[in-house]
Length: 67
Length: 219
Image 1 (cartoon, each protein chain N blue to C red):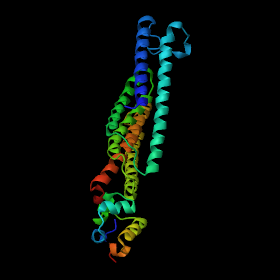
Image 2: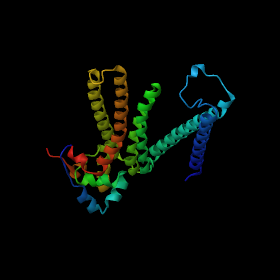
Image 3: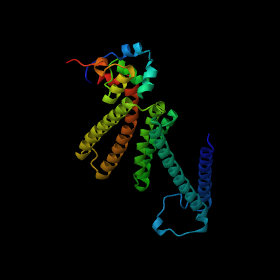
């Protein structure tokens, strides 16, 4: 799996969303959000875009892949 | 218990009791006709055979109805899972059906009695132990991570199954293990049934592990 850093937790908390709420908004399970925040799951482009829209932050700021 | 299930269970018990009764009748009053192994090519009908024939037909009809109900129910369950995007509802206790796999051992008995080998296929039922893990994950929302894990679990299970089959076939094809073609075919049948059972079980077990613990991270 590609190594990356995920700042989802930080942006989700700024937006005032719980993992459950975010999961419901983007149509995944809470466990998936949990794995995403720990950078243990590489999401599809569709999910990444949905998350980016839900927290109102560009994808590249949430998921940071080293050059 | 649902009314339909109650009817099915009651019918099953009735069929079983009727079969037991007609077997007793055939053994005591009809010289064990249709009970003990016999040559059906020279069979001639006798009125005394009627109870046994009746209960055999009844058991066959019951079996057909049971199979039909199972297929309909499985199809309905699958459609519901697709519509709601959640896994089908299943009681983990159904995993106990895996015990039916031991029926495969009856193949050794039937083979020694009349040479039939089909009961060896019952080893396949060991795969039903996977219902335990499927039941534990019943009603789970199938998001993209779940589907990805499911596909990975199926692929891994198939991979392991094919490896086992390959190794077993290589050993069997040496012709030295059993020294008898018939026994080699029976061994092949047993290995195939067990390998497929393993595939059914592993698909569910690995999906559960991938979904619940850190196994996925280790790979």
